[in-house]
Length: 119
Image 1 (cartoon, rainbow, N blue to C red):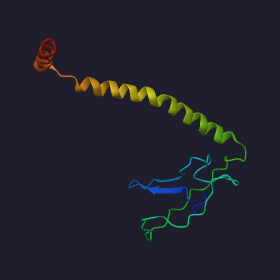
Image 2 (image 1 turned 45 degrees about the horizontal axis):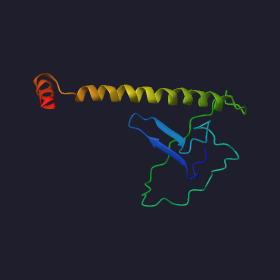
Image 3 (image 1 turned 180 degrees about the vertical axis):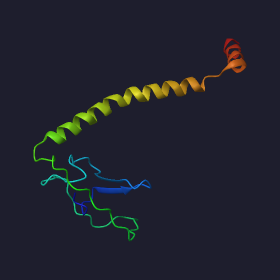
Image 4 (image 1 turned 120 degrees about the horizontal axis):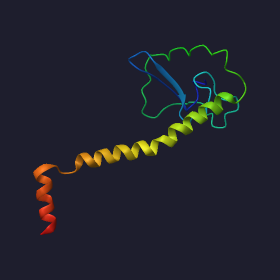
């Protein structure tokens, strides 16, 4: 990937894992390559209020031999992203319902709240 691109991001975690990605989600073959003719490529000039340390981004893993020039990888990743995005609203609704249930008054408080509503 073009590490000098404004939209390239690399983050290392305590476990030793490193994530390399395009913040605009325009690199379907990340972390190995960006599209050759990426319309949003902008050279990173400087970041406002950002302090650059002496750490170096760990080397990118070797590109797999199965990584080809066709669009099959991008199509597969897009399909997986569509599945995750489709599941999101249902999961959010479930979590919201659980939170609402947890906030409902219980026991004696519930009984007293009902009496107040009737008066």
